[in-house]
Length: 509
Image (tube, rainbow, N blue to C red; front, side, top):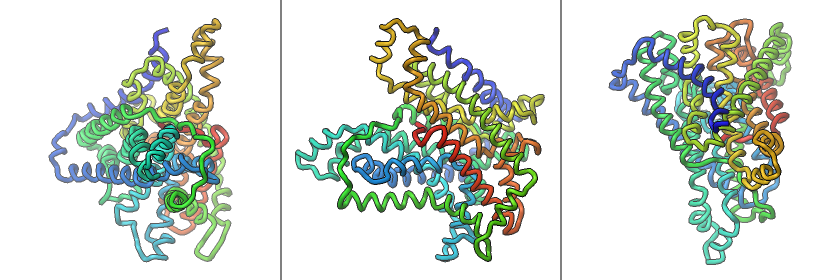
């Protein structure tokens, strides 16, 4: 069987539901490249790059030292902490927006305590980006530092190097490709974010992604096409750099690590506390806001949500759409990862990341233009979900396939096993945890998906995300409280699905 044949179904799917709709959007009204001479759009580009670079830099400054200390010291609760760090990644965007607003918005708790309102500053958007992306940096950096052999650091210490100097001159250069890859990935996620800049950036701090949304829905397609092309050029360059820099993975934690003491313990406490505040405080704020009213603790918000006649429909739609999309993503992504592993093609690596490089909003508009017969149909909505989930399955499974010991596969073949026999008896059992992790990430992401749903959904297909968005659009304390209660339920559902499937082992690399 040709090595790339397994990638064909996913390639056809990406062509039909990414390349064709994107091309249809770009060709609909032509491309107005003149906007790149407009100071307004150049300013949006500069801000997009600045906020993404700032997020990536802060994530590196916080995440790399914490990851190094975790990889070199035995700390109580370390495994649990690393698993909990995946919780922000599977948190729906609207839940994060609610949490940040409850803490730092005009009426937020921190704002009332300190008198400092961050709602009209770029700081709130940067913190939102860090909420989602700092865990990615910590876990990828932890994997890179875990692969540094302890005896190499021991040799440096025996030659008189201090602990800090050994980390700077030995561990850092060896882990640098992984750190650089993590930085690029955080930059990509921050540059392509839609929900956060739309909700937190406002008109002043909107990014290119927000401009694509506004231009497309005001039918200024030539402008939208030019913005999409500029965004694609930027993200394609960053994605190629990411694929070239590192392969990711979780590393192999060293047994018998020394307990953290002295400066290492202080550093772990400070960096760990700061990371926990950034990553978990917004989630705690949402949960508390769902049970706290202006007059004190209350369950009225939860009663309002549970008593809604449409509550059962919201949960049912959310679950069935996630299961259908997750199954499609696992089948297509699993086959693609196998084919890409056998082909050893960097181009296929880049292709697997293409769905993360394109605005879901622009794709949704492209679907309506390219497939008008399928507009407002369930297959189109599920296809959009599968496209968003596909890269997560591939990026979880591919590093595990590349880490398989060649001698094990050769031994199976020498015993007479054919290609399918090796796949069934060796490859699949060894990579099943990563496949389950990818499925967990895919399902959790689809559960809270919002951008494409907003464009392609119908009233009878309302999900928990659209129900949450609907309540946020209504004024009043009760609607905000019910939105927080609904957000807490959505977060718990995502965490439950993720834990049952994966248990915290999934990775995005």
